[in-house]
Image 1 (tube, rainbow, N blue to C red):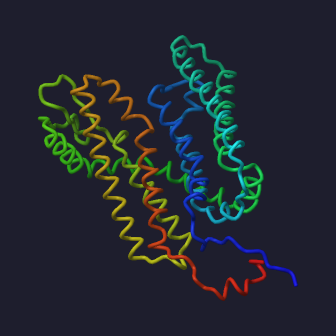
Image 2: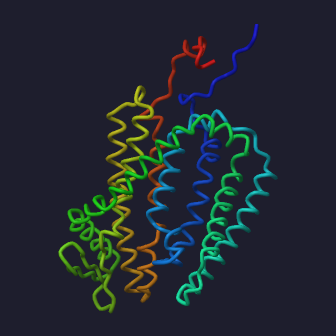
Image 3: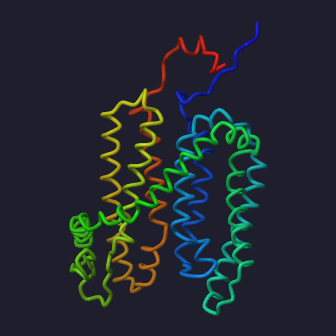
Length: 336
């Protein structure tokens, strides 16, 4: 009598170690991107095309949605990973990332001279792909990735379509700052005041508020492009995708409570971020650093990490595991 292999469906509990292996590549790449992006920005030319924020948003958000949708498939495709092998690929990743970091800074310094050609851009893109591949191989063996791709390729297409549509709608999402900025700026000003600062507010234009510290020479104008409204929308998108992915088992009231808490949390953290940027601009007398941080992807990556952590940690509450023992004892033909 043959033994039916044990199935790893989406009802199983996600252990801490497996979750670490799944989220590890995303965390590592987020750190590497977050370190590099505040330092350089290409506004035209070959590098502006490859390092385009819209293209980055499509690919990165698509990757996040793909991982969220295909966690059960990745769980079932995981294979043992030797520590020495992981350390080898981590060393490879760090070497490649250092090369990418140094090459990107060199391109940014030579950009004004107009010395960047198509072969520089291709070399930069190749380095980006190698850094991404090595980051994944730190946590997951190639065999697991092959099985995962066979199980989840259709989910990658769905995730890409969702991310493209999100980026298309991003200008409308950013315009929600027009309604939100009075309360956000007010909260940031209260935070500065509670820290012993004397904040002043104003309006540079109808929807562009100003926040500054009285007595300091710099003022921070917060426009919709650096207000992180898209972070709120991304959290809502990921929560909705998870809800539909596990719809038969979702408990709607707990899910709604987690969503509301998450939106309030990101809103509050964004106010802290704005107050911190004003502090850098005013008391630290470094307005350029504040502007670079405001325009970088660092805060968005932090908010994304918080969003994923909140949704995955609370998943057992709003989406309890499937306890149908009969299903495990008598699997269907498809499950076998």
